[in-house]
Image (tube, rainbow, N blue to C red):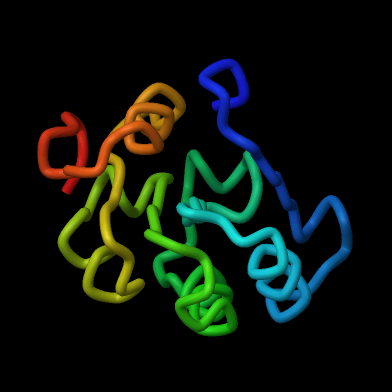
Length: 118
């Protein structure tokens, strides 16, 4: 993203010991055009993700529309994109590895043209 000229703010609630409300305030203060949220809270959960989406949904609720267009990535988006879209209320989910797809989303106004998304 930075190589393509985008400003990036990366927040990690576990690493920085921040709750969802604080994360949302920091994200909103940044004024993003796009916010990406993962559905797996730690690396280990990528292999066995929790069955529910309470934590990312709580973050998005705290963000309250102040994060621009919203993107969900992670095992839920990959394995069950329709339920992830519905439960999180995001604009798009990325199926599979997300790094290149997120960079492509950042440069597109028409997200329907971006592969590996739902």
